[in-house]
Length: 383
Image (tube, rainbow, N blue to C red; front, side):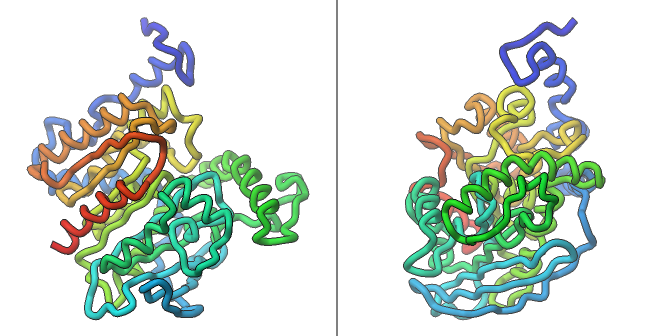
């Protein structure tokens, strides 16, 4: 008989739930039956695609350039494209102003941060007077920097786009019933009070989005992976980008998107997941309450543990940056995720292409961490 374990999200049912997930899972490369990483990857990746469910057939975006400019040493393009569903996507492309020839590319993935009103603006800066909320956001999470700008300045073409339910892709109050939006209307866009009201509402609306997606046979990761792959399509198509040298990176919700996009798409040749690495066990028992509904893929944990989604990149290089006092996770499960990825990459014969760093402090992607991330991209995408 299973006995109750330490305090957890399911109480006396916690150990039962945790031990329904095999370790290693059925399609884990750690399973003895898998010996060749190149034979294993297509099988595991096919299962991942099946689980997340693509919401529509691939449709490469046809961007419209809204305007172009130079700012702080960068050439910046403001783009818009229409996907098969939802409002148009806004995106930015950043690269050094004097760049010539083909450069490596990066898909810059914005965070969640409890702020759906904004998307790409969280990690970019294209004027000297950004929105005050974005100044505070970058001060809090990014050491006062717009990290996408900093990376572009080092010699990359960086695309940053709003993804499903954020920024230009957010759900508008006017498109949902009055009783669901508490009869709120968008009266004064960009005002701090209204943005705070919208974000509070959007946080409470997440469970309805998830229920609706599940009822349609869809998943939230499937929706944002679709958006992110379309941005990748565009980046890879640009004449100034070397499509054989493309990476992706992001913090928190952007780290989640890094895990999922890397798992989904072999065109990602190098990844950096920041502040979003743990195990399904951590979600089951300890930390599901600290996370968005965006994380979950029904049925997948039986086949792949959460870090093994990122491990679908093997033997391509991946870097994981953790914070020791990150309240979103438990340190033991962050460390167990590190061991899982270490084992996957060692078995794949690519131990040097996986690295995890642990930093003091809370949930963040500060300047020291950015320095390490940028050096990782320089090593593997410029070397």
